[in-house]
Image 1 (cartoon, one colour):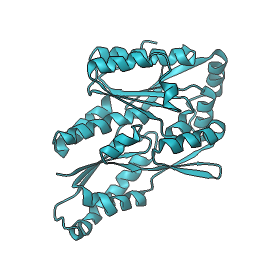
Image 2 (cartoon, one colour):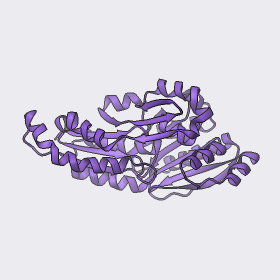
Image 3 (cartoon, one colour):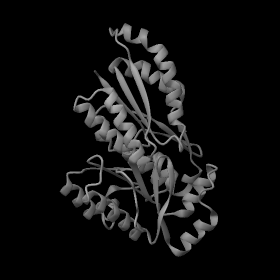
Image 4 (cartoon, one colour):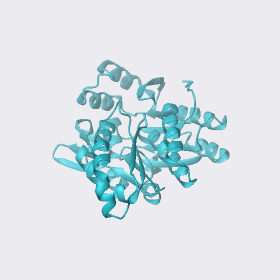
Length: 315
């Protein structure tokens, strides 16, 4: 059976990995003022746009998920011919409309695919499953990498579906944002009151940085640490300890950064975490954060994603 994989452009994995494993992309449109860029995970274009716009006006950006009709057309024009079963893995439903759009489109796709496949010489059924990864950015990549592994091992759709849905419950995304004012202004622009002006002002005045944790679609702080680099170091140390303890459910660690990867590699704790992954046979994926991610959390944000049961962050 030919199994296809689809992610949205907020899923932080290296572009070459997506291309090598034929992972299709649902783009997200990002508009700041009169400038619009379709986020297709082009790292060079993302960095150029970042330096030109995001630092100044990124919190004003409007992000638009791939529309229902365009998802429908993408599948009927290509995916229902190229594959027999497709898994579409999206950013957390609690944070974006992409899951709902893909689900709505799936109903029409399953009604309309038969003549398209018949014209291409296929008389077998087509199936589509939309999976809510219940996480964000680098943490979305954990499910996609596992889907690639299972497909390569020859596993069928029922096992892949069960595994991805299980991982969604146990995937952890951690983030250190460098600028609480940016995060607060961005949240306010989206109508999200989770970051108050007072907490942003206090955090900036005292140089306190939160370590944010996302699991099962819910995001909140698990630690508050003085200084951006000490916060990143503590995050990397926490993840390294889980890797060394053999806690990970998949041999995968995904890291993304809101800027040049050369800057990420200079952050304290980075090398120790890489060494822990190498020693334990955990595959390391690092990428420039998507434009979608950067306009939502700010330049310089660090995100780490992995799957493990339970979580306790020692701040």
